[in-house]
Image (cartoon, rainbow, N blue to C red; front, side, top):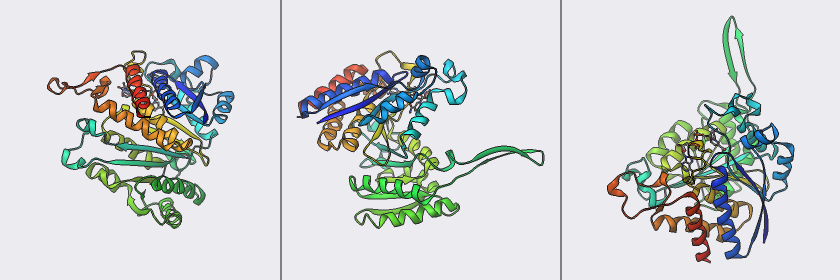
Length: 370
Ligand code: NAD
């Protein structure tokens, strides 16, 4: 089959890690008889330098014309880069917000799991991680507190700031459906996280999620208050399959979950609209501190490409092949520097590799799997 992939390499390590993901996709193409064509799309700081804005209308049209978009990361050093002297609407991240809005990407899926090979990097105690964990957070991305009406004004001579949190039932229903359908492809459990003991928006959230659950009788639904969920993620992460939650709760919980898994360079993410289209990107940023040195870990981006194969292109076997190739290479002891054990006595048996070598090793493992 043929697939047209829009590629936003972005800034910092973005171009390096995206190159390795393309290498792995090409290996999938060769091994399983598919053809991937790539169309570069400018976004972020590189777009500001070239066009004066972080995302042009032409770039949006290019993204809309793709079967899916693979992204590296955007942005620079926020303390020193001239991009951050511009007004907020012209800075690199404004490009990403505009793209999400233009493509109606309302659902963000972030898996967080423990790679057995990287157990030592997990900050939790061995008795807590037990058999490991494999969860995914489905976060609503275009509603709630971040998009509500806000204002700061003086009331009786005192400054007062207000933000509003609004969800309508349609917004809740569409994200709930996404969460349940992802759960059907996993271990068939959804934990819906809210603050229904306090917030009206959460009470509506709970009611609508329960209605949607009726269409997915095979999926078990639990409700959990957000404060409890924050505790449970560090107490017993293995209990979760799919966590479904609103925008701000999801923002905070997904960062907590990625810290728990212990390795920022390993975690993928995807954003969806109502179709099979998706924007796939690593959970980490553009790491300007290590850009251009060929030392970044490309695995999060490669695993994001695996998500693209699975969710946008419906190529499950090929997605499995990429995920297994990553495990094979880690099992053989290959590590980029960020996941190399730090203690001298633990380093035996590991080989430090560059970003490009890691990509080649994973691509070779994909080819060997077919
Ligand atoms: P960051 O994730 O870029 O880096 C944090 C730390 O992790 C750094 O020490 C970095 O070297 C390391 N790191 C990150 N990814 C790595 C990888 N693949 N391999 C090895 N080490 C890695 O976060 P930050 O420093 O807070 O942000 C840098 C820039 O990235 C900022 O401009 C920020 O706005 C942007 N950012 C972009 C996105 C996005 O494009 N979606 C997301 C987060 C941050």
